Image (tube, rainbow, N blue to C red; front, side, top):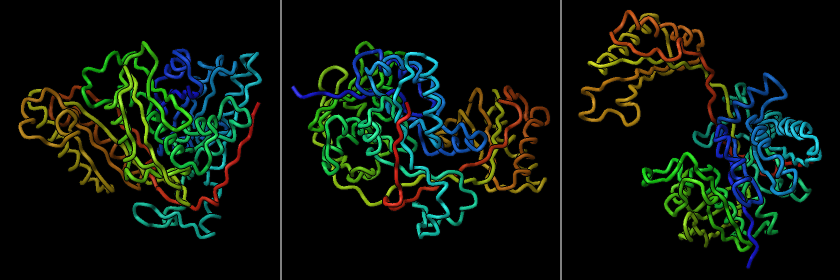
Length: 453
């Protein structure tokens, strides 16, 4: 019987269930715990935190996750791979080292730190060298927003993670690696897959894609037959059980809630898929049309037949930049005539903003409970018992946005009747962080691995 390597997903985003990492490690045998924290917007949030405090810039939830599994990790029973480093992997590693030190006998924990994805310090040099970092959607060169860039991180692949594992790391912390690399790297390391073994590498990528969002493939956020998903309060997070030939199964620990089926796995597969023939990663291009799924027992799906092709010579770069300010305020109106009251409040507020000669890039109104999700539907406007009037503005002028925040509260007494909720008081002015996707030549992105013990 061929050897099986088990990779369990314990986090699907920054803010996921805090109990999941411990439950994955304690619930049954796994060899690796994969924790995925990063999204495009997360990097900019972490960069702003680092600006305020150079010791920050990483997903601090990771410290609690590690505390819950530190015993088994220190004992060599499971290894952890996480992109919790955000824009400051070294600081994240120091936080975990301090945690291990406080535990006494665990002070010798080996932590692999992967760096090199952060291009922010090199932006000017890269642009001057001819790397336009053009927006993939608009074609505009980065120079148009250069003075407002907040963060810039290349999506790196599995190679530096594999290197850290080869050096004996029990915990590997990266910055902006691809989500899929967190699962593919341990499989590549354990089975010794070559850098040009495209089919097996593609299988590792697909395995990573299936479990990267945590319980989204094991019954959580499941659209099909969601009413029948059992015991979501006790949902089991997914586990990859992989063989050397690239075939693998998706399952979860026995006795947990949720469901692993061809349907739940399929829903996750099409999530953020793009061109099904060319799922591009730094390591390999995976062909989603080659994937075959088969039920393989209760809460178990076999995945096989996957093919891949050589990757491109580019890496994707996630850039965030400052794009003005916004504020959002809400009022709740009750029956009778709740919708009409909310619509009148909207007209009154817009008229007052116009009289104040306040100019915004956009004013947007939603009537939550009536039309916010699907737009106006015929026959749905009458006899609504309550509706939330939500209005937001955005613009470059912070003072104008600030003035908007002072115009909502007066409606409680000088607008339509039956306000039942003034959510959160006066709206807060927030800086807008916009997303700028770009490509860059792989050759100018160099990663490094340091072992911290």
